[in-house]
Image 1 (spheres, rainbow, N blue to C red):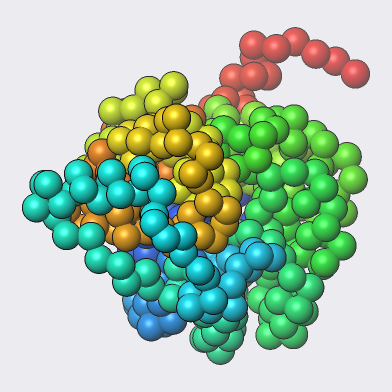
Image 2 (image 1 turned 135 degrees about the horizontal axis):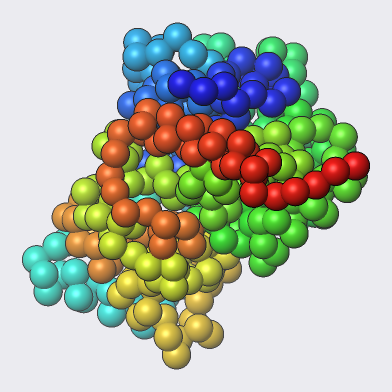
Length: 363
Ligand SMILES: Cc1cc2nc3c(=O)[nH]c(=O)nc-3n(C[C@H](O)[C@H](O)[C@H](O)COP(=O)(O)O)c2cc1C
């Protein structure tokens, strides 16, 4: 395999600056180990996992790989301390009742037991302690980077990476002591801001005192090369890794990503009250004309999770929450995650060499 290294590779002890994003309900140990064993960074999507699942995934990763491991957790400012603290609207918004009725018509029961880990801050703090006890090398803060979390990680020898969607948030996480800023542009899947990846990258590079990683819309090696030339130290990639053999989601989800075109996504608070980029489907479209019934975070999350989970359990793609970024338009196959890391590396190196042949410049 060709060589592609940046200073970030030394910081994280990885071979190539390709970081597999921690994605809830997708990034389990098999995916993280496949990305890590191919030389990238493997990351568990810990936000939607229970404490026990985090434990078993760390253990499985250690069986499959001797590479460093990252764990993604969420500490949003307005997360409730526990699920029981959230008061749900009564009656539920009309679109929720409609989706439930549609699933029930298909013979799919919708159960109301939203798991604690999907929502509570205390749960995420418990997962953090567990991960640090088990020597997880990198903690990724997905939504907010409290200074206490950074200090605890540093005391225990872990590196902290923070995902941000605005330059203001980037300043804040740097002030709070993060080691690496991941800027996620609006193109990206999952929670995203309004500014595009290349613009946000340039904004943050202007003041950043720590390495900056680019995320959002990256699914080819030429894009990885472009991000590195633009000043990023690496690429944090989510959507491309959904369509892989090791991704822990349903086959219908993987196929939806392969089938989708660049205009198939929508950035909307319809899943959890925060802006999430996802594939447009019945789960999103049922809110058309009912936007005023949408609830703030975390209430919207609590009322949509039973539908998302019932649909996912039965592989009903129309009623699932299919988070994915605009890069879906670039994805046409379902290889292994290791092949993706190797392919992106080879393509990035080729793009860098070719650029010196194609573009004439001198100083
Ligand atoms: C299906 C999906 C689930 C995601 N879940 C999480 C998550 O649980 N925590 C998190 O910090 N980021 C999450 N993200 C965002 C990713 O970490 C990453 O920033 C994003 O995927 C990058 O953009 P891309 O999808 O265009 O590669 C998710 C993204 C996707 C596509």
